[in-house]
Image 1 (cartoon, helix red, strand yellow):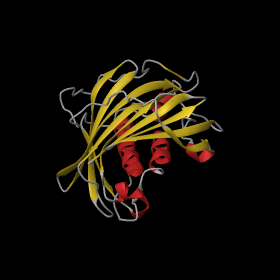
Image 2 (image 1 turned 60 degrees about the vertical axis):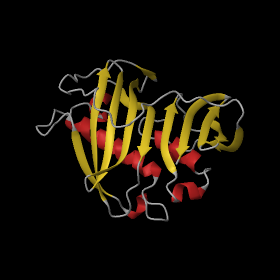
Image 3 (image 1 turned 180 degrees about the vertical axis):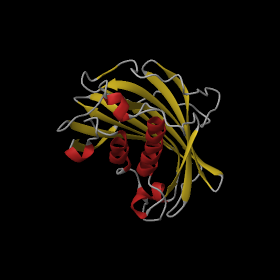
Length: 246
């Protein structure tokens, strides 16, 4: 698609929180929060000419590698939220994108994400085939207090669940969508921590892709106000999640 006449390097989009996106207490689910950020990034990419459709001409897609969320408060049902996004860095096969979510002008959430260009046929990273010089970069504007990082997985951990990857877990790139990993892990967190909004930050590392019928094991470790989950296939870590509690 051509670059839209409405394209801007810093992009904002409004969303209304609907009831399907909420937990029983009426506040936005963490999984749907991540989906909303992704959809905002997708819209920005579309008007900027580097969307999934544009990239598929070269068998390419953006896939998430790391994500950090810092949460002041969650929006609730019927809130109109504004998601603002911009790109901190973009070079060859890698990009860092920032997000902020506001309700009535008040910042609720900040996020920093790390993306890679992925060849969907060769199943490996490669340089972006499309021009992107029209995107102004803002490396100095940070959405979070801390940057994403490599999660340290404790040696001592408890197996909490075994799972087989189902068709409903896959996305358009034909691998497990990043929010599915988060959903699997959050299903094993004490529900009161979620309902009481006790999660201050969460961080995710996506290490290896999972495909249909893969067999995985979910492990958990809790140390004081920190949860670490990791998902393994054949004893190799595919995903790691760290939750920091208030």
